Image 1 (cartoon, one colour):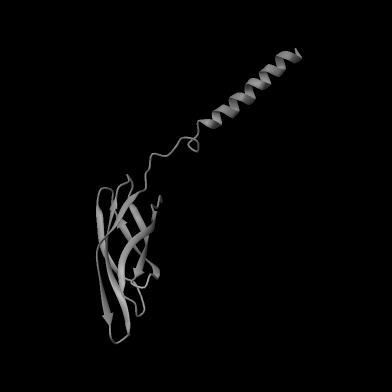
Image 2 (cartoon, one colour):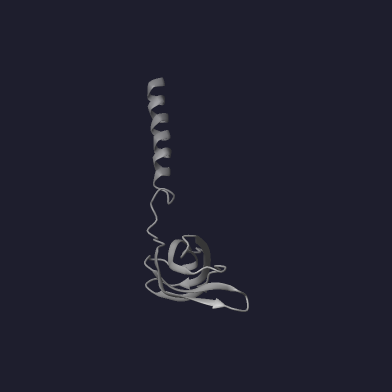
Length: 129
């Protein structure tokens, strides 16, 4: 009798354990949040009043995932003629699935000439509320 009881309890414990494995927490999500981000154009202007150079950076963010991008943050690195580099970021909202957004930002580079601008990182957010 004890042996039979042991197997029944073991069966119930395994059944409870395995039934938990089929919950939504174990099944991988099919939502993909991703984007391609590129610098499309940049130019450096000197603001005489302020006494500093500021590259105007135009970029394109394309939603390559299958959920809308509700908010994004993009980091840029500029390299100057003297080898120094500066990092800055910008942000934006609402890039729907299959679409892209274009925008621009300015990066503060005091009294230095910029030779290149590149995207170094980005963060994407999709709200599920």
